[in-house]
Image 1: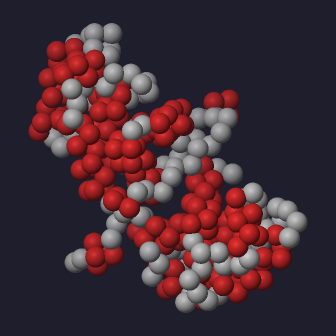
Image 2: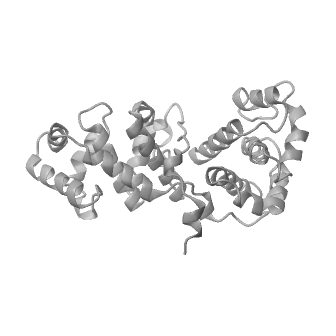
Image 3: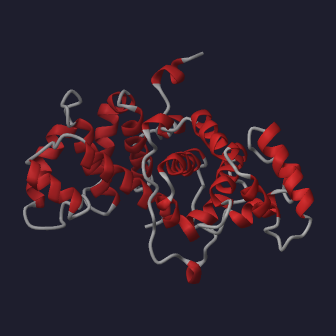
Length: 301
């Protein structure tokens, strides 16, 4: 599977695991935790098909979202047929839209992939905006707070990252980004200070890594990661972001989530090539509640 399908399946598994069990609790836990929502994954799992399908056809059931997520994850991994999921979408599309923002985004992203699994589309594609769970304003505000907490030592370390070349100019431009530009680098700053910020943001544990990462993430959210800087980093050092302190980890992870959701072709494996593919595909965790969109924001004129 490609990255976006792996990510979608991971989101659906997380939803299924978090919700109330739609069937026998122990069997459903094993389906999700041990068999990755594959209904043919082990003894007794196929016995869950009928109760899952029943709950997934009952929008008022408290486990409606969890059952739907489990069936979608199974379908995207070659299990139940996409035609059955297409029927659910045509029947309950409005109910999916009414779900909580995080659940809605995961389920509609799943249906968007299911739509492409048949020779001819069996239903209209979900609106892309409804597959977005994150609030970029909240994320970039938190990233700016991290960047503005930078120390003089970290500023100095970043400015000399290019073997000390043009350190004074890098330092001057970096100070301008932090003080005057909401911690977002402009296109005109694609070398000063972008070069040193990117160098430091690729070395976990280096002095200035956290504020450099915050500045680079805020910039990529602003420009749609058009140069693939965060794609490259998730592919190569993605595991390191899980080790960040919570205050930094949550907004950085939310930033990755936002890029994945908003940029239709954002894919860390896109330019890797066969020989450079990572040994493992790391899924982006769901965004923390503080960085989710709200229904009030969506309804605002």
